[in-house]
Length: 154
Ligand SMILES: [Fe+2]
Image (cartoon, rainbow, N blue to C red):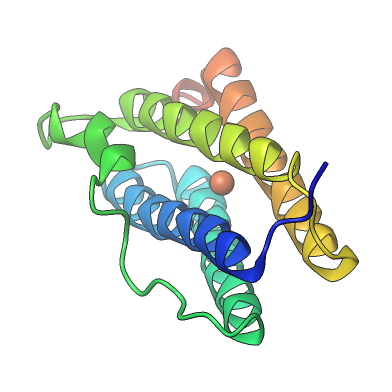
C-alpha cells in the first residue's frame, strides 16, 4: 500500500472533520427532540466526543501544514434524518436518526483506517473509531430495549 502524500492526508482528515461537525449538529437536533433525561445526557456526552475529534483532527491537519475545515459538510447529508420529520419527533425517531448517522461515522472511520498513516495519526483515528463504535452500540441497545418507555413508566 503506497503512503499518502500530505495533501491527500489533509483532504481525508478534513472530510472526517466535516462529518464530525455534522454529527455535532445532528446530536443537537436529537437532544432537542428527546425528553428522557439520561438519554439526553448520554447524547450530550457523545456530542462532546465529536467536538474533541474536531479539535484533535484540526491540530493534526495544521501539523501537516494544511488548513482545517471550519464548517459542517456542504451537503449536510447527516442531518437528512431530521429535515424530513416534524418537531413532534420524539425519543425513538431521534434515536433512529442518530443510528443512521452513527452507522455513517463508523463506516467513515473504518474506511479511513484502511489507508496508510503515521503511527500518531493512526492512534488518534483508532481512538475516535472506538468512540464511534461505543456510540452506535449504546444507541442500538437503547432502541432494542425501548429505554424511553421504561423511563416514562417506572
Ligand atoms: Fe459518534
